[in-house]
Each structure stands twice: as structure tokens, then as C-alpha cells.
Length: 287
Image (tube, rainbow, N blue to C red; front, top):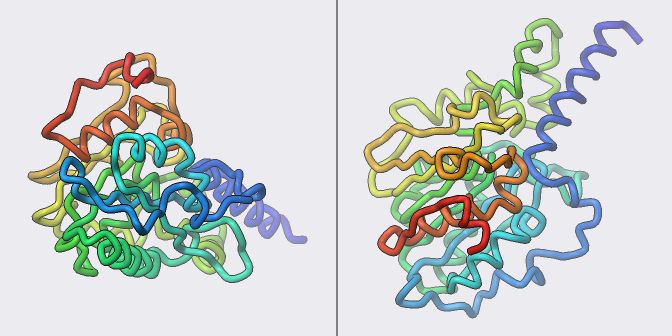
């Protein structure tokens, strides 16, 4: 094999490995399904205290169960109707989702939100997403009419302005054909690179749309969506949160912030019910 081809394959492997950090790669043991996960109860009716269903949107290479094994029960315990979906599956790739073209994934989210609203009778939903799942809904809100059906979007370590994957993507110009390979093999990964056509279109004209409340929760230890401040949004109705400003001892990186971080979860709960928000501190791990 020619040296440049070996290097190309190595680069692709490195990029895919970095993307795998977006979520826990436990899907190989994915015995649970979205239907028996304990949430996604279509008989659930939102209460007066929590009148909107919460739709959880997983990240790249994740799925509707593994990404939410902690946050979904956390929200259910607080009285929310909680739902999650799988999106972005490529043909022949089981278990791992969030790899297909992001605009197509946003269409799948749109259909799922419609299904949830019809089942619950709610006028609007709240969305909570991790990584790509915190960014992709912005396409739905901006281009697919989602702003009329969504009250709030909470992004946990979202790839809002793309990522350099800690600089690895800067090597792409040195490997002819690498970017085309990534686009063909894993469109969502290529589209999350800083400066991609998708990112340019998504962020043209501003980060937000009127009528939706935005919250971004980031960690300075993020090693996947880098630099971490690119996760933050600009707009009139945006709250950007850095976990270490709330608890300097929080060491969560990109995976753990969405998987197990109860300080982040407390901020999610505050964003979903700001009228009853309580201060988030290091002690929030005991909530």
C-alpha cells in the first residue's frame, strides 16, 4: 500500500476514534431498545407543573438508550414525560447512530417531535441534546419549522460551530481525498468540521431563531468539541454555562458531561423550569 494511502487510513481512523468519544461506545452490548428503555411512554401526559414533553437527542455514534441511561431517569423522577429517538443510521451500521447527513437527521427529529406532541397533546416540546444532538436541532428550528413546536433547546457540549477535533482536521489538506472519504463514509462527522458547508449554512445570519430559549452547557475539559468556547451561542435568549464556573472541581470531559454529570443535569433541570431554578454548585451531585 502506498504511504499516503496508509496515512489517509490512519487519519480517518484517528478522526473516527475522536468522534467515538462523543458518546459511550456501549452499543455493541445494546440489548435494550428505545421501546423498553423505561421512558418513551406514549401514554404519559404532561402535568401542569411540567407541561411540555422532553425529547432527548443523542450524539454521534450513540443511540437513544445508552446516551440517556442517567439523564432520562433523572428527569422522569422530577415529573417529566421523557422521550428519545434514534437518528442518522447508515445502511449496514447497526447500533451506532448519528452518522448520516445532518439535514436528514433533522427531518427525522421533526417527525419524532410531531409524534410526541400528538401523543401527549402538548403544544410544544423541550429538546435536550448531547454533542451533535445539541447542535442538529438548530437545523430543525431554523429550516424545518421547528421553532413553532419547541419552547427550549438545551445543548450539552454541542458542536454548534464545528470542531477541529483537537486540530486533527487541520491535517486534511495534506491528504488528497481524505475529506471526500469522510463525507462518503460518515457524513455527519465531516459536516461537523469547522468551516464545512453545513456549518456555514447553519450559522449564517445568526445562531438563534426567535421564540426559542437556548441553553448551552460546556466543560473546559472537552477534548472533542474544541475549542470548548465554540460551543457557546450568541443571541438575545441564550444562556451559556461553563460547568467549572459553577463547580471548579468538576472534571467531566465530553463524554461524562452528558452521561453522568449531575451538575450538568441540575443545569438541564433549571433550563427546563427556569421559574423554579435553584443554584447549581458542587453539592448538586447529591440532588
